[in-house]
Image 1: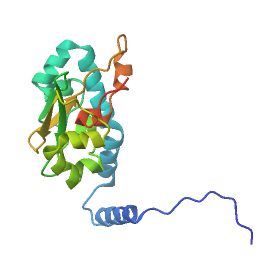
Image 2 (image 1 turned 90 degrees about the horizontal axis):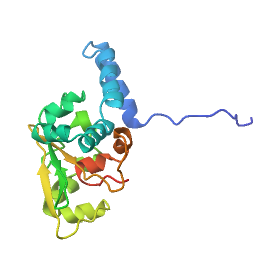
Image 3 (image 1 turned 90 degrees about the vertical axis):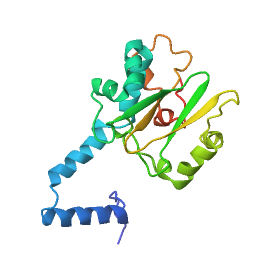
Image 4 (image 1 turned 135 degrees about the vertical axis):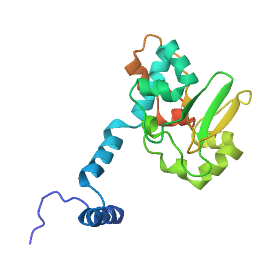
Amino acid sequence: MPHDSHDHTDPPSDLALRVKALETALTRKGYVDPDAIDAVVDTFETKVGPRNGAAVIAKAWTDPAFKRRLLDDASAACAELGFSGQQGEQLKVVENTDAVHNMVVCTLCSCYPWPVLGLPPSWYKSHAYRSRAVIEPRAVLQEFGVDIPNNKEVRVWDSTAELRYLVLPELPAGTDGFTEDALAELVSRDSMIGTGVAQA
C-alpha cells in the first residue's frame, strides 16, 4: 500500500498527555472550571511577559519623571502602565549605570516578577544559577556572553516572595530619536534580569 502524502503531527509529549489527563479528571470531579484554566493560560500567553517589562523600560528611558517614579516605587509605576498583579505586588527596580551592573537571582526558589517578565526561564530556576550567581557573578555573566569590566561593580539582588527585582538596563548608544516602541524592541528578558544587556 503506498504511503499517503498527508501531513502528520507528532503525538503530544508524555507531559502534555499527563497534564490533559489531570485537567480532565479535575474537571469531571468539579474541582476546576475549564473556563478558569483558559483564562489563566490566556493571561500568560497574551497579557504578561517580557514585552510588558520592555514597555516599562522604554518608558523610563524616554520619560525622566516616570523613571523617577519607577525607581522610587516600581509597583505603582508599573501599575500606571497596566502591569500589576500576582507575583508583582512588591517590585523594586535597580538601575544599571557606567559604574554598576545589576543582576537578579532567587537563591531559595524562583521568585520572579510575572506581570513584567512572564514565567521564569528554566535556567533561572536551576540550582546552578541560583548558587553560582551569588558566589561568582562575573563568571556566570561571561557564560551568558556579558563581559563586565573589572572597574565596574556587579551587584546581585536576591528576589524573595515579598520583594522581586527588575533591572533597568543602560540605554544603548545610537538610539537618539528612537520611539518608545522602537526602544522596547531593544530590551530582552535577560537584560531585565541582568544576564544580558539591551542592544541597538
